[in-house]
Amino acid sequence: MQCAKILTVCLIGGSHYLLLDEISHNLQQNGHSVRMLLQLGTPLLTGFSYTSRLHSYETSTWSLGEKYIQEYNGQFQEQQTQFLLGRDNFNGFLKFMGHLSYQCGRLLEDEKMMSFLQIEHYDIAVLDALNPCSFILARKLGIRYIAFYPGALNGPLSIGLPSPISYVPVFNSELTDRMNLWGRMKNLFYSLLTPVGQALIWSRFSEVAEQHLEQSLSGLDELHQGAELWAFNTDFSLEFPQPLMPFTVLVGGVLNKPAKPLQQDLDLWITTLKEPCFVVVTLGSMVSSVSVDSLITELVAGFSSIPQGVIWRYDTKLWPSHIEIPPNVKIVDWLPLNDLLGHPKVCLFITHGGQNSLLQAVYHAVPILGIPLFGDQFDNVVKAEAKGLGLILKPTQITRGRLSSTIQTLIQDNRYKSSALSLSMLHKSHPVPAAQRFVLWVDHVLQSRAGLHLKPVALVQPWYQRNLLDILILLTVVLLLFLTLCWSLCRERHLKNKPKSQ
Image (cartoon, rainbow, N blue to C red; front, side):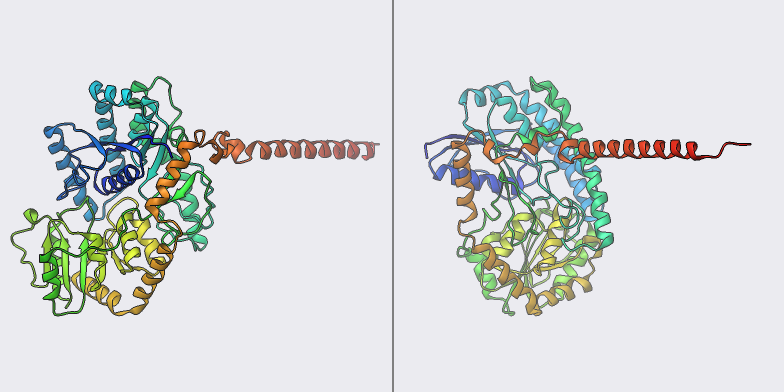
């Protein structure tokens, strides 16, 4: 494969950065010349260095400045509190998209950065498909692009995947693939809301697109369908089986690796535990602390009442001074999640249900307790529970008693560990590892003509043709004409046969 110049675009941070960092590194290691456009200052990743691959691929960083970052992080902390109180809603997501749109406009106005990217003449871009700005940027630069979606198959709203309502759960429905009558009705209702949701998301970006693109766009679907490939960070060990298209590939687990030996302090802590196993707790890169005192009080009380050791990722600078840390709980600013989940003594993973976290739990065969907070996490933990990987406790349901009893159920009931081992076997038995799979698909797209051989004509068909509504209307008209003709003939015959009045 000839060396290609590839641009990877990471404008959000957090787990999105971890994924694109690994993808960029793998592409560079396989002979390509890779540069990442990285936006600094997002609140989604703390305690981690963005320069972990300094000598692998090239990086161009961009930032809105300290003042905006502080204001944005403050607003994000407030929104985080709403998540923990169980008040996540679509308005919150739209507000988040509004922030991304503002940041997008500022980036596209940066003449120095845009000129630099344009003169580089990249062969293709790999985009974080959650952020519409990535697509707008690729269009402005005139670069072919591959969409990498960091979540499950039901996330993108319009990429033309066949999605039968009877067994494919719609995003945010919190349904499994085995729906009863009411479940299918709920799924149908959510499917009708999907185009409305997509239109609202696009409304946050349409003005930016109009200002910076020469050709006007019909909507987000036009950008989505312009991708030459869609790669999803998921796997059928977790995903419900459903139809795919040739332009969709599953590469879930690019971060999964065999565990490395732990640092001395963590290893020493594990060896001093009285119980034979320990619990790992992290609520993801977005939640470095718990801003609701009542919730943290219940969490601490629940952890203190179990015999196992608990290692908890939490920003130590933000730990409430009036809450004492129990002897069996170790608080750390950052933890090596992959290495801890791969440790032979780990027995449970308490997670927010992010896609990366669940895939790592599957890889290392560790049962989970899911505490979903926002976005796709609710759907993710429903899938995990349906697969037998663990149980769910929403933040508003957490009490010390319920938490401790659920933890003991997951540790003591062998069915969860057995399911985790089965899912791990399925995940690992794929003939090509996820990271290598993605690289091979990028190579394939680079050699093909815009990936056109992978795209069905349905992507460019009008919606009424794709759903056969034109045929339905035609048949309806023909049927009405036939019935009208029959009625006219019958009426005429009836009038002829009607006896004349005397």
